[in-house]
Image (cartoon, rainbow, N blue to C red; front, side):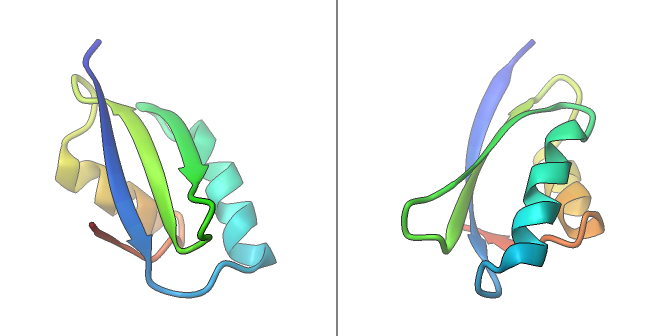
Length: 71
């Protein structure tokens, strides 16, 4: 297992719906951890690089309804 951490900027303000989607994304295959930054405008995603590529992580986040861009 190769753990990788990537930071992403949220493309819309954090609200209850987006927070729920981030919480639900913890169950996505290959994701190890998702953490909201104290500023509430970024997230940290830790994932298993042997299971997901960088593009795959972004696709999974967008598919889960979490609009992000890499920082």
